Image 1 (cartoon, rainbow, N blue to C red):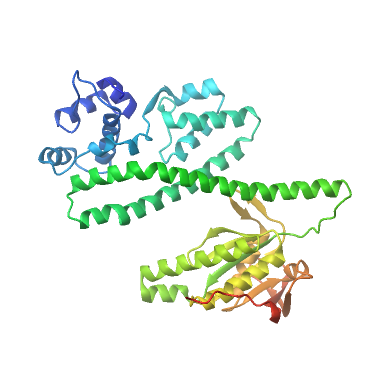
Image 2: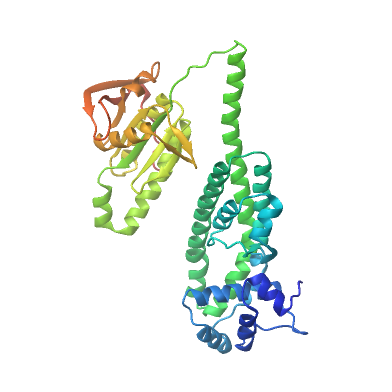
Length: 411
């Protein structure tokens, strides 16, 4: 067990030494024999100051602790060991020793969900491992803008994971403890014990999913590399098609959620996500971002994108969801920070607004890239879109009668 002096607690928690003295006097922090403190006490000092800065009165916290109505002992549990303290080095010193620009180190701090640091602020111990990775990338000649994008995607994705965990932890762990009659102090203790058991399991699950996603993406990259090598050797000829971007949304979603409330909206969104993930993955596509009642998707092969879109429209009807509609365009796109940009994206978004309920509306570029596919298209004439130069030829996509999607019957 680590032992720390009052000065070490203050340094590692990032608080003033006088603050440590004050919360000791209030009885919130209690030193052990020889006036030494534990790693849990470091977390207590940091969290208590964060609570105070969030508007929770320090004196009232102290009174609740004295009465036994509140306890911070849960911060001693192993689930919280992952939250390291401050290292004995500043951001400026790290920048000078590693060659990583201070501006990039600011993004590292942001990736941890914290405010931008000053040059003389201390680096957190957990940040050092990320900085080591960034340092390696810098030394390998990675462009700083690429590293920054990578950090922001990691931060955004992992923040959503952490927030989702916190939500189910509240509904499935904390609230049942209260319903069982536990006091606030008892609940904090019980949830800390549960978290110590659960945290290692969730970390293993997170790593397993990450590696599975890596294999999927790396395999796609390998396929492209192998095809390129064979094509260069004159042994294979790829059929080069532009990728396709589509937008799907549910007709009447806003009206239904206004009538049914937030629970109806959440249910519809969850069912739509499940439907979209299934259909897009079956056809080699991916959902890029969710837009409340809809989603933006990317397909390397336009024909597969049309088939996926028809699947989604048909499955939405089968699953008693509001009618789905899709707009799709094929053409060059720009990939950045896990998202796609460019004229193709803008046109696809505007086409979706033109589609009717249950309709998959595509451009001439999609039709031309979908030859030899089990699809037919009905042209509806040239259409002019606001903000888009020139008229576009629109088509309604149809599946050949013998190729209708099969949906599982409810059991």
